[in-house]
Length: 129
Image 1 (cartoon, rainbow, N blue to C red):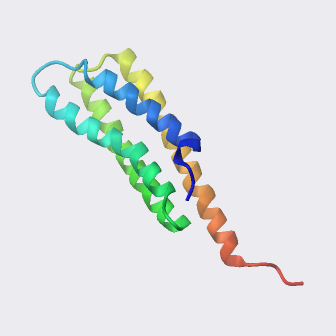
Image 2 (image 1 turned 60 degrees about the vertical axis):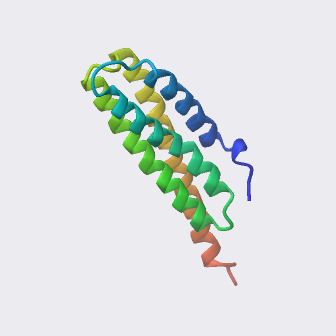
């Protein structure tokens, strides 16, 4: 079990969640409440699943939670695009949030790959010569 607060990806996901909450609370207009609620559930799931997965006993379980976090991030990305297209989020705010979203996505993908490689190496076992 590791301390999720030491994971850089968790820190960036947490920052993105705070940024999204601030952005979403400014949304006004017909239908914005529905999108805002779903967006906040999706974005909150990202650092939550990273944290939960880090406490699991195996790399396979951790990767499963990281993939869930990545799925929630992708859902959040769509809701950000929808919010922009409906005029609930300005282009400037969209770009800032999108940049942060892409960064977290790359970090999650890299961490999933790194843990997967570590698993593969462990399965190979020691080399006997």
